[in-house]
Length: 387
Ligand code: N2P
Image (cartoon, rainbow, N blue to C red; front, top):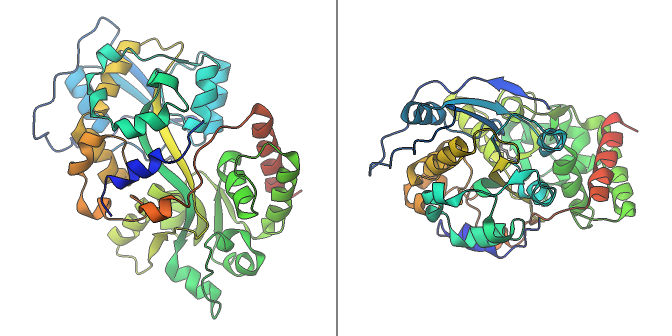
């Protein structure tokens, strides 16, 4: 499977598409110098500050410090754990953030609602490094690619500590469909002993629950949400954690099975190896597919530092920086120029760069109405409360 195929596969799908944590800029551990010297970050007259709001565990160590050193721009880098948290900040206005990184499922209504501003593309020459196939897909959420720049993509799936899961299942074989491990009482009743964790977000859990019961993952039908809630309520007592620290929870042994993000599960797997754990951690490819997401950088409508934002976006779009994200954070990049800089063990990991056969089974990003989002939140909250 060649490493470019994911992008072509992604083109085949249809994109229609506060838990604020203070995190100081990453400690200095500058990325390896570029093979070819990158152009210097453009000078502008804004105060030398840039406020970025991104998901946790998504930026390589040292990348922010390298940008600060080169540009003289001080970056305040905060993180959010769910699209819902970011969305609430943007809707409230005056978030103070210049760059945010919504999933396209949320970015589409954010663009339509005027919460994001068009990019000044003249200040971002490295947009040329992006894969045109990906940009065509993103245009479904962002006509003419005016607002969104890919950060990374991945999928919501089942992650396991294989060693612990096999032990907890005893004589029971692994199911053909990995979603059974988190949604089917026969399995959850056994796995609760070693810990079941779900991502703590309606729009991560309800779409995969809907898909599991054979409904449209982004359904607008209230009856479907009722059905999802009924299915989930049967396993509620077995779910130990609603997690926003999934890497630690899996790697640290609090959970042996999780609904988590592909790259984060791979990070947990790598951490277990580094710690010389005998346990094997794996991201699974459920037979019925996993939920694709595409996260994108965008400039907020009230950004005070749009030029600094453009400078950072351009910096991130350098091939070596986009490759560093894939190599260290275990998520595919939409940066075509970066592809030959991805390490073979990352490019060859089928749970990072999935094969086309599997890609065809995956649940593509879509968009949902406000009513559907509300129905998801209601179904999720009543499930979580155990009602
Ligand atoms: C966090 C990755 C976020 C993926 N490490 C979900 N959008």
